[in-house]
Image (cartoon, rainbow, N blue to C red):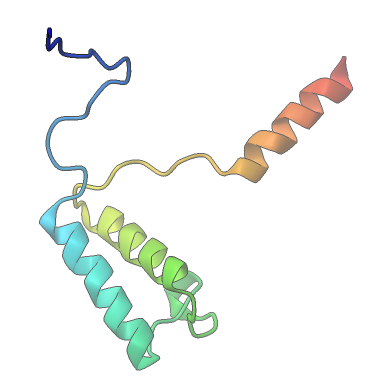
Length: 91
């Protein structure tokens, strides 16, 4: 019986992805959502946030604005699809 280690092709990231300040911001956004005071839109002029995912997104964007350690936003799926459609139409 030989026990060989498998090498994974995927690159493992070392260290934390999110900083402590980002965690605090998201937790704060979640509390405000539960309380009913979390608003969406620029300057909080939109409606009250009900969605958990939206609360997390707002918390992360606040953390980014503050300068906390947060990974960059992923490109939205709809944006990548529309650019692919445009490229196909041009041909």
